[in-house]
Amino acid sequence: MIAQKWLSRARRALLAGGAAVGLTAGLLAGTAATSQAATQEPCDIYAAGGTPCVAAHSTTRALYGAYNGPLYQVRRASDSTTRDIGVLSAGGFANAAAQDSFCASTSCVVTVIYDQSGRGNNLTQAPAGGAAGGPDTLANANAAPITVGGHAAYGVYVAPGTGYRDDNTSGVATGDQPEGMYAILDGNHYGGACCFDYGNAETSNTDTGNGHMEAIYFGNSKVWGSGTGNGPWVMADQENGLFSGVNAGYNANDPTVSDRFLTAMVKGGPNQWAIRAGNAQSGSLSTYYSGVRPNVSGYNPMHKEGAIILGIGGDNSKSSAGTFYEGVMTSGYPSDATENAVQANITAVGYNTSSSSGALQAGSRISLQATTACCTSDYIRHDDADTKVVISPITASSTTLAKADATWIVHPGLANSSCFSFESANNSGQYLRHYNYELYLEAYDGSTVSAQDATFCAQTGHNGQGYSFQSSNYPTKYLRHYNFTVYIASNGGSNSWDSSTGWSDDTSWLVDQPWS
Image (cartoon, rainbow, N blue to C red; front, side, top):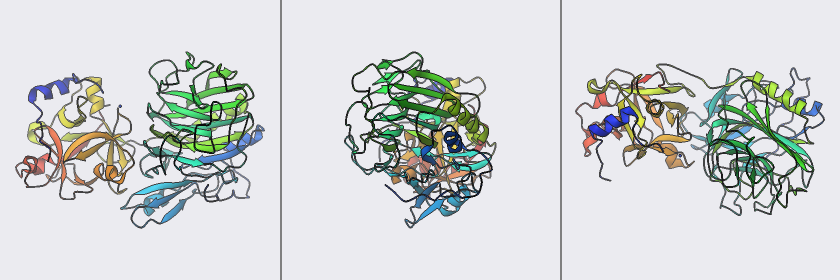
């Protein structure tokens, strides 16, 4: 075991005051039903505008009013069987309960995201490419719970290393042909590496030169381009460049965005392209750029190849992160009026998170309060100085940073959907995880070990208050604070933090209103 360094009272006081230093070709899709659609969904709107969808991907809802086929497929770890997840009714929302039942007491990954257009442009596990080996990791099916239209649903949670692709598509733009695309993303889950993309890419999985891609990029990388503020930004990956406007590098009209649910759009045709974006919950689109191709050699004309990627770059660069809910690609350059009508559909559909107080509910934000008599003003928080997880006092007068450090987003367990995982509210993609029995804040990397270490099963609190949280892969050990540091600990054992003295109190936690 690694020797532990105890948190001093002086350092604990600094934490309470927030003085710590801050930190970062697949299966055929089901066909649409033949009955008349009751409503117009995004692909119906695009078709009416003369720019029909050639690919339509979503794990949350139907993108045609008549679509009644599968949205995506999951595979469970317990027996490697798969299940298609469809819609509740034609043109409706995902049947998340079917996933919950199928994945109960085990973990599931998303194996296929079906194309609703009928062209068979399904997204499956990405193979190796020029930038990185493969196949890529598949997304944990339970990691991004939301509600849409008041119904439970799941997004595609892309951790570094996760990627989906289709290199043999039908109808997707090639060469300098015009196209459009949009994606609904989690605006608070992003990375600074290359590249969280959705759109048109190389069919060879290698970088074949400038202008061979046209995809939505979302993140805060400044290597090729940027906008105002510190990011994240919506940009266009046109290969060997993330463009925020006509210039390579900085463009002042591309703002930092912070919407929890984000509509991101890119469209391109002969010597013209545009970036548009908006809040997917309310309001209209803003145009961040509309004009000629970048003033760099190789982008006019374009040399698009027609593969489709999600979560990766064209050469399988897979070091970034993000969450995808829905997206389409079109034939032809959509008008602003058509895109505005699509945005109105998106905002009306009701993307949202859920909230809860005093209970554990997927998607809710919570704070976890100690119940031991010494420490009832203390909450579990991450220590910005070294990523360790500790307890320290949090009050109304605590700093904004301290309050945010003590706030967690509840997810179905990454390794067992009947349990829970806790994501930092202010460090997107990073979870409570044990290592050598001590708790740390670490990014979920998509691996089985990472999922197990970050999964905790709730039981009635050992002292009768709140909850006790059992380690998924060490079932005799529970989350415990000891000397103001958080461990997984058993009731008696060889480690000092396994002491039976105070164990019932130290392993019992109240679920409180989120501090941030």
